[in-house]
Image 1 (tube, rainbow, N blue to C red):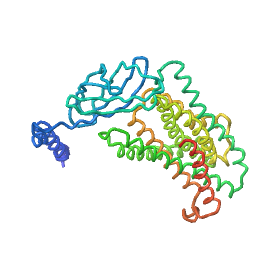
Image 2 (tube, helix red, strand yellow):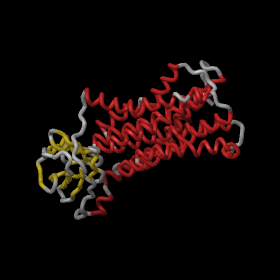
Image 3 (tube, rainbow, N blue to C red):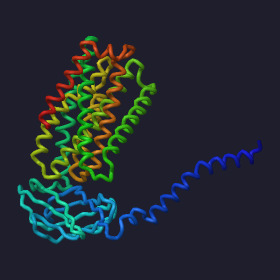
Image 4 (cartoon, helix red, strand yellow):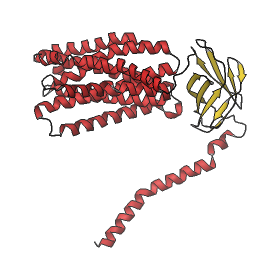
Length: 399
């Protein structure tokens, strides 16, 4: 076969492969321009209007509400009420929103600290959408003080507790095999509880997100992507020759655990920052205390795989920062630009990473032994139960 004939055959094959995509594009264009759904509905059919409050912040300028059009039809915001009284407002960039369009409403309402207020949006068709501010508190504003305070909160919640947990390394290093099996299983139990917690929080956040984003499907997809991504990172780390084979598995697992916990703690920082940004200062304080206790056990999870590995102080510090410092970044973002859909994405990243770490941990601890027989041993079974119980008891303070 000549080169010209081969090239022609390849071009014909590509043409056949692209033909369905061309036809699909034409069909979608026909549907869009013809509007069969509009023809069925008719001119008298009322529009489908859905507005979702993304964020409501209180400040010196009054009430600032970020609103998203979650419905298929265009929505025009005609009036705004606060506590059953109509108020003037400005809308940036516009009061008319297409599908997934977003606007920022500034309402010069003299809100009262500590009181409850109800914001009501009235569309041009008379449909209303309400949002209640249960306790009016001024939202944090970006500045040196904001970043300093939230950084301090992140240090209290993430960095210091994880660092305290790392101090268990000498104890872990002196354990015999049965004791080490117990600690590794306890670590698995800790992470299993975090996985369940991340899944619950992610699905809860998905329920609050606008329906157009299909947040539950997004949560599951990002969770899977995070799982596969960390699996690839782990495979790459295991091929590196800079660490001796005897200690490589422990280091890789410790690094993966610190990464998974760091992503999870980023989500915790988001929750704390959002609690203050949304005026739930009392809840924010409870979250700080609860997460501080909760996260101390995470340091143990990081150092457990390093029981038979020589560890330098600098390496331990880096692992602690990787596991705890993301709390600071999460608190900054949660306090400034909280969004339900980004909370879903961040929680999904943490859930996928923790699931992958659990799989890695079980692989290492079981070795060549069948998984069922490994889990049935007394140290492993009791370690799993104790790990879950410890996280549950410390988690009671958060709830």
